[in-house]
Length: 421
Image: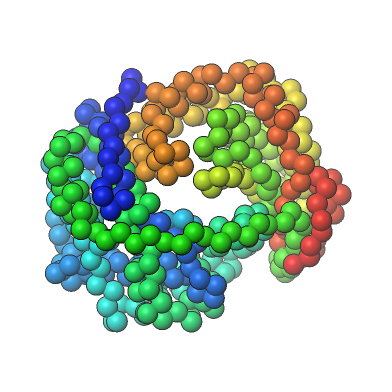
């Protein structure tokens, strides 16, 4: 039931277009990924891409912000514009009979935004308010610090920037970011839904064919160092973050890595939840997730607890991580598979989800992983396969970040240099 035929082509200016027809639905969706995310923010100007993301929604072509928004609303176009580390992304969905017109409206937003003087300060203030709303969120502060210490520069930057940098931005800096990085080179347009491919191709040629190519310089990437870091925070809570390397999405063993993280934190029957939270009552929240750049992956673990239970929470969590390759049962693995297959079915019914997956797969893999292939990869996982992967990839080093009134003893952590923040 997951069979799909993928169509793809590339415009002369570099824009890659990948289409997954879904004839059983009556909607169509697109995700346009433009390589202009926060990794392209210059030092001292973090937040440039975030402000630009707000500004491109404030009028385009011959239409004011109100007129352009009304045109998209009249098409029933559900849309979202967001900034990420690598990309500015525009996602949109509507009924299939209005989809071609919708492509034209999104094209105006990306290719011909106004970027007017009077729109800069309101866009700047929206980003500023978003950052301020997170200042008093300890879990956010911990996650931000964990990312900063776990990924290479500039991939460790917060996508919405830094408050001090936002205050220093100018409209010319934002316009310069648009001119240099909002470009079809390496941009990807993923489409999924009930579409006529020949019509879609003609519309895309018309809308995006004149988008000027502007190759960008390669990023200067600086490696990170493993370490132990503490953020002093006068609080009745302690927040604990751990990270370590795993394989990226493009690796042939990614699904094994996904299964290992699922065993750690895949619902209320997972090992971290069961052992750390339920059986021992050490924390009120604990979770693990896998995050992947194009060429490297990381596992991130978070636990929220009290200062009195923080040390035990850390020690037992590390113990569970280092023992994940032991005693895996068929029941554990089957629960992971069941959760994944449920997500697959829901994704199959959502054109927006599939359009996003089509674009992301193209970025990470240079091809689309069909739902059929995902289904087969999940079914191929066995206890011996997952167990062997877990044992071979046990973390030899970890990053530890804590936020709370006192630092913790990292003696049980795999060997890491200690750095106090």
